[in-house]
Image (cartoon, rainbow, N blue to C red):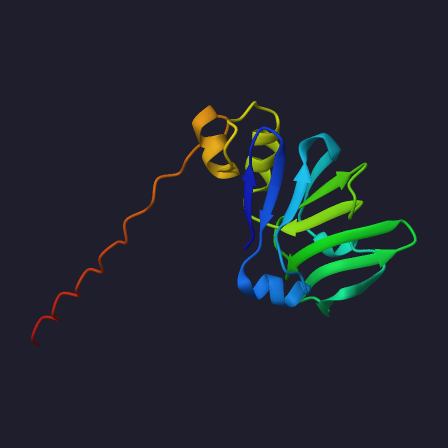
Length: 154
């Protein structure tokens, strides 16, 4: 799962080693905040893909990673199965027209983009939690199993 770091000037999509390999990309995706025009949450990111992977990896319904080229422009995608995702429309970005990411933190990203943040990069979940815009769910303790009582002797 990608990590989203946000500071006062840019959003950085931090890719893991496997995501870099699947997307044929050497570095992270850096997006200037001024180029972001729209952020949308979606339950099915597969409907947003357009074009062909070039370079990238595509296994239908399983994973789509890398640059997708089409007549409408280039998109960057990291999509895993049918999980909640975020679609970021860009204008004036040197590489991409759109970024499509599978992430549990789409709502936190939308809310973090609305607030002013510090100069150093911070995870979007931490930003949203600090502002109190999304509830922070405490970690649940695992419940211990009750041992069954012995059956009465007959």
